[in-house]
Figure 1 (cartoon, rainbow, N blue to C red):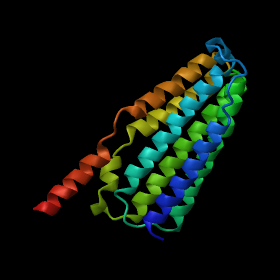
Figure 2 (figure 1 turned 60 degrees about the horizontal axis):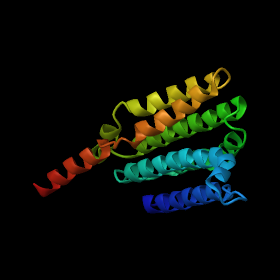
Figure 3 (figure 1 turned 90 degrees about the vertical axis):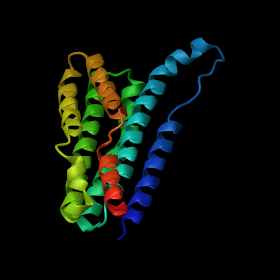
Length: 198
């Protein structure tokens, strides 16, 4: 299977995930700004989860730029990631509807940690089937942002039972961490392009 089919399928699934999330948003009955107050938690939950799904889509797209080979293990690792991403609309809705109650907030963190682990598994599966000259292993490096993210989620899950707003703040902070452009893959691609020009 070509990497193009993996990318196209992943793009389609991610588009459906975002569509499901937005369908959970219902406008208020009234027309005043104050009528938005009851639906504000849902809107904020949607924004946070949209950002997370967008981050995974963006990173998946960048990752696949260095990929030359795709094998069966990669396909299953990719499906594993898509499975956990597809659960995000459910955990978002539960957390948002109950104003970040402890159990839904912890479950949201559990969903995020599984997405992070699944993405790491996909990266390792891709590195194992692609030759060193692709630069994939070099671009990923020690993946400090990935490890910080998983550690942050692991901390936020139990914290949800003591102060759920600290957990939410951790989820937001990790999303902001990933909004900072990650140039590792672009640097490797630029270096490869420069070598091709010589």
